[in-house]
Length: 123
Image: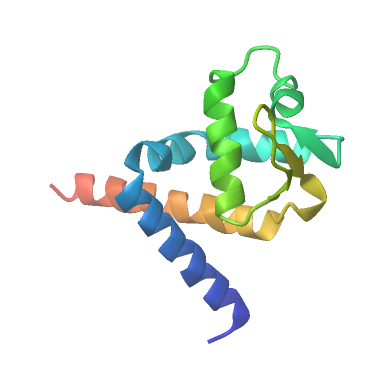
């Protein structure tokens, strides 16, 4: 098994565990994965807080608390790292942002959506 396949299965296993243990968080990530990617890839900061990343939107697609949950989930999925843990604010290490892993995540959700669409049209 190649390291890329290993990373795929690891991410797939992590997503399955997230789906099983925290379905609301899984659904949140599924709905807003592209918004999360946009925020991470458009940031000009190396070490950003959720508030700093959230401020990039003039009309945010969700509440700040939900964005914090998305960032935390992305860190748990090893897409980015938490630089400092604070009781009132985490700072995220965007130099460790794994765009390939994010691509895998987006691909996974696209595949799930495609499967659901195919299953629905077969009926």
